[in-house]
Image (cartoon, rainbow over the protein chains, first blue to last red):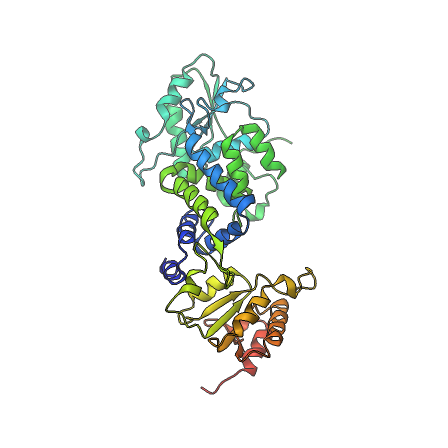
Length: 207
Length: 207
């Protein structure tokens, strides 16, 4: 960041300096692209900069965590938990809100969610008490719920977490399922790692 | 953007939806990274989201164009034009504010600037009257100014513009110079285009 500081001191950007340094903290932007973004926005003050300032302010003021599933929304319970058209018999367990958003883009899934807020990780010192598992066990005990779909990431930590949750849910009267592993749709075998290919082979189906 | 709309309708993101769509317009971010950025900021409301909202608001309210050189700043004339330690005998002519910022990062240049606001371009229908050349001619007429450095980009349009400006300044009592072309410092010959290499050869110097 030496370059950035030097730059700021030299130019004396005032308000723009603070803006660039904050923009550089947004994932996807670095010090260089933050400058470009700031300049772009300064040239589009009414169409982009002011609406963005407003949207950030509104989101910061109004967005809250859903007390049922840990999703974020402007209402609590969130739109999904409160939705009348959702299938209340299925709960899809995801690590993070970003994963929930990814699942929502899947046409077809109409169930509910449960956001863990991370995975078990010995390395990062994240234990069961740091994850939102208790709430899930409670929810799974409800008559309504028939299936819990474990959609944690296919990483070591994700799969460890899935096993742990399956264990915690063994007394609940629910089907516990996981996402299938296999060849990505449109994927080429040549570019696939061995683990995926071997999983896809094991899970092969009659055509 | 079909995907984005579908996604928003399904999730009912409310305020977050508007935020994501605005973030996606920031250069360096697309629809996908805008979601990631929004999520990242929602998790860092006090350390990032609120300060960024404030910084955007302040920049939008306070940043203005310098009436002397067309730079942007919170004051007019800008900090550079008003600077007491700047060398007022040199004016560096650049296409855009981003180029001014790039030049400012160069240790050593302490002169003033003049931002054209673009280049002549027959294709885009940009003529001399669209650029801020008149102001430059006026400034160059001042006793104080000894040298005008043409630092437009090394593109066809940039060089055409430089030639045009040199022509407009021929009656002013100033030295007109341009940036040197050559091998970038740290650059490898093998990766250089022929034009640059040929320019570097022509401009060769005794070691």
